[in-house]
Length: 376
Length: 82
Image 1 (cartoon, rainbow over the protein chains, first blue to last red):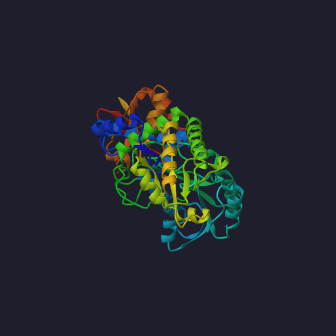
Image 2 (image 1 turned 90 degrees about the horizontal axis):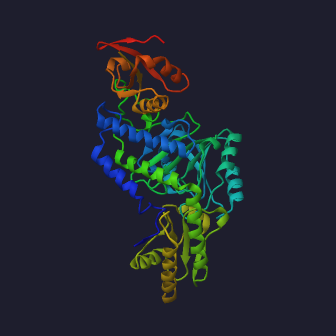
Image 3 (image 1 turned 30 degrees about the vertical axis):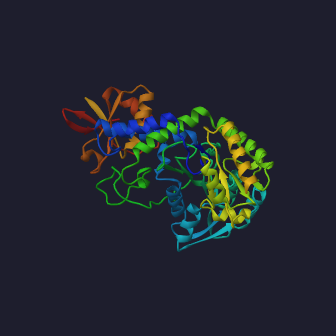
């Protein structure tokens, strides 16, 4: 099997991740609940992970790192906190349904989707800025499109939010663990949301919410936190306010190993290695009849989308799957991105690498897709 | 004799534990009696009384709400004088 669906979840994980999950299953009690060794041991692992993540993203207070089930969960908390008493939001034309659907569900919220051409950073910034209205409370933008790997201009958007007195919410699902993100350089960003199981190499069922410069934080689930137990109101301190119920300690232990792996490997090395594979892929695809790859190396990170003039993306993925290649076809839960790029009718086939992907795997893929296109 | 520094959550306790350890203060993270946590579940760092002033100086530079600091004597607790 050659796995090129790392934008959905990374596979394989580093060996240290598997070992950490197993060790946690064998040794961890419930963190933050009891005073015995098994509970305290779990509490240390959870805190170590919080601290490692805070270090990686420049957050001075580890308690502002919140563990969630996934990036969607983190985005729901962020969006419902920022817009809990209504208002208007502006979102980029490359947002995932995990942004669009919560907004659509909120009765007292309106939002504007800003469709702009693929890989045009200036246009994206200008049109998002132009869509801000007097009642706009926030801009929500993905850092990197999960379909096309288009890098959105976050620093400019953050500065613009500062000028307007509004907040930026960032979906870092495809960039966390590949591109540097330093929350200290994003003073107008209220939340950064990300999965733990993609380029941070943690297990599925792990997600992260970074609470930046905001006091507007609201829980979307209340319950036991192991703190302030005699008070029936939800604690207002972080992370407890947003972490009711037993944490996914085994997942967090694996995530800690994943974050350490990423930190040791270095973001620059990871990014350069993956982009080099993307360039090899795109150069090879260029010479195959009936294929189009969406790529601009100046503004790209992560997934590469392709379309075939000879078959729908799902069929292409199915046929490649028969040959042992794992990639995803369709709309990738991001219909807005396809409207922006003009691919909404057929969707795209998406290839996404990880630190474990190799040039040999890319070459095998090119050989197979060349054959399929020729036979079609 | 020892001292208890009571905080509201395991996260705060772990953050303080990391800070104190890095400054050579020996400690244990424990669950204190509910009465010391203002009637709620809490965590505490148990340190030697001899380290209390050093610990208190470190606390002044960190934004963590401390619920109370107590001296433990023969199984009884009294508020520490800092």
